[in-house]
Length: 173
Length: 115
Image 1 (cartoon, rainbow over the protein chains, first blue to last red):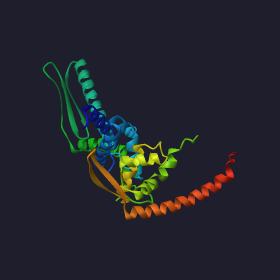
Image 2 (cartoon, rainbow over the protein chains, first blue to last red; image 1 turned 135 degrees about the horizontal axis):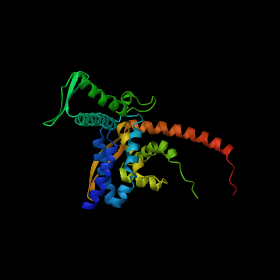
Image 3 (cartoon, helix red, strand yellow; image 1 turned 45 degrees about the horizontal axis):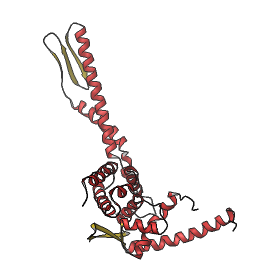
Image 4 (cartoon, helix red, strand yellow; image 1 turned 120 degrees about the vertical axis):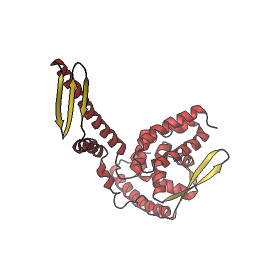
């Protein structure tokens, strides 16, 4: 029976392996099969040795990916790039709003309107209220979609989706 | 003393060796690692073999079946398919031709060992 410690060692390894395998087709099945292989090896040489024999999880995942013999898109990396780009734009928007509010306050208070891609943003800072209100337009929606999509596609190396296996070698079923 | 082996050399022939061993008799993953060690590839790790098994199965060159074991978890046994047997035959022939050429070239290029 597998001890709690052995289970932790195995699952920690599989978690790191699984993260590196996210872009591999049917990666969940590979992780399931590897778990079984680890258990079999552990029943013969112990869990620590069984896991050590696999090498670094990233290197093992690279082994699986290289056996595909064609580059695969990195969707996870693309999603991270897209999220970072949207986050950066959101951060700049908030920084701009705070700076504008501060400036209005320093100038004695009042209301200021700014337009961007058809959306009007109203900054108010006086003795009674402090607020930022904005309308929403389809142009702004398209802008944010582009801010996410372009880095997502570049980060994912989307062109790899059309890559084919080299001629003269068996093609994956 | 044996020279250290370039991993790239092994990588190219490992699928052929796996098919050859499985032709002798079916084996599960860790047993194959042990058999390869016993055959002289003692620096081969399980992490090198499992991706190859996965690819051979995906390409339809080997098939697998789960066998329950009284000594632990169920083992996944692999066996070459007809496609795998054909592939082994053709790769082995290509390997033998290459080996003859390489031996011939090396015999001319490397100094002979004195006994």
